[in-house]
Length: 160
View 1: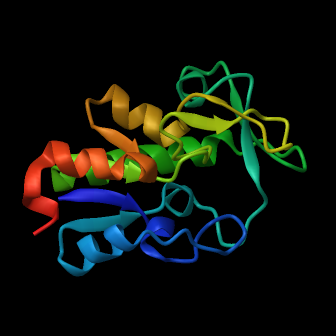
View 2 (view 1 turned 60 degrees about the vertical axis):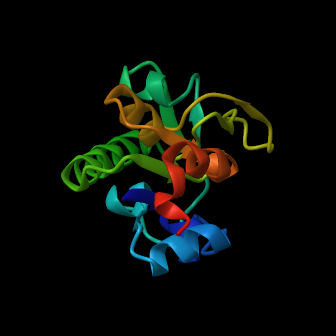
């Protein structure tokens, strides 16, 4: 079993009320091989919501108290992102998932690239808050861009 970002499953939960449907993930859900999760909704956000980016670092820095997650208007929403990350971790541990597929570039879910905190569309290497927490706890996290490689690593369990 794997966890997948709800937006990748076609649920309209992104900050702007849209989704990023990935057909392979939809197929895995239909086959009961994946379960959806949205760390931002679990943290207390609603849809739609104001865009947010990590300022002064990445998700690991947020967890260490060295960076913050700020909405475009300037409101500090760090605590909500941390809350969503810990709830997601608990869910992953309870389900004993083998991997988690999260939406790249998100301040929660980015697993190799995130926006740089200037709200200008520029990206930097780094993890989102949830990705960083899951990785710290030994959980394999990839983005939708790494899904094909994950499926190869995991074998045919997800592609039958």
